[in-house]
Image 1: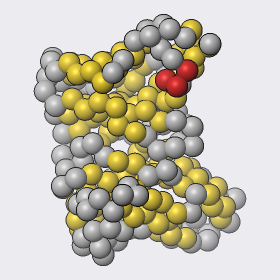
Image 2 (image 1 turned 120 degrees about the vertical axis):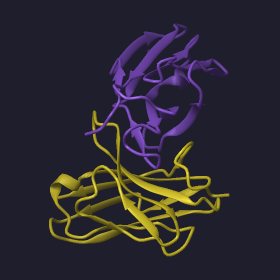
Image 3 (image 1 turned 45 degrees about the vertical axis):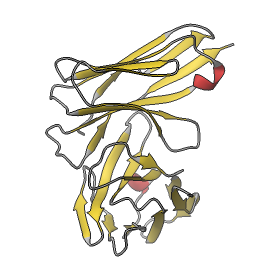
Image 4 (image 1 turned 30 degrees about the vertical axis):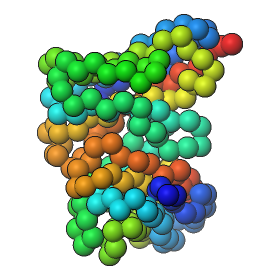
Length: 113
Length: 113
């Protein structure tokens, strides 16, 4: 399938640690989005990025749109228990067409208290 | 606003049965879409619609049918259920005809025996 390469697939960290995950593609995108999914729920948008090089924060979350337009990363600082979940990157505007979002496989974050 | 709603929450079907997954949104969004989520696969686009009367195929459309008679509703029909369609299905919508910043429903967990 047409998906982005997201890494790592899973992370096991201690509460208070910083987290970093990234997403790469062989194709360029116009928009990068980062979502979080809690168990039994639908994904919720965390951050949207629209320009190459853009760095955007949402509380303890920071995401960047790679300068090559082929990658993006998400950082979480000082993790807390409610950060547990699956994080997805999504790209828009690439070769799959302007009306489609393509998702990464997800990063499952587990936090040990 | 209720946002994006999906019914049912859970469903079990036998192979060959047909059914319709319901999706509705009260945000007056033009763009609506259906995804399926399988373990380790992220979300894959099944069908999408940029407005009433307009639908198009996504990445994995086979075995599914959609129609969009109103702005609010976007039902997904399984024509003859197969075990390979066991998955969690998410409906999403976004403002305008663009796909950015989609809002997701809570999902329907479907099991086909």
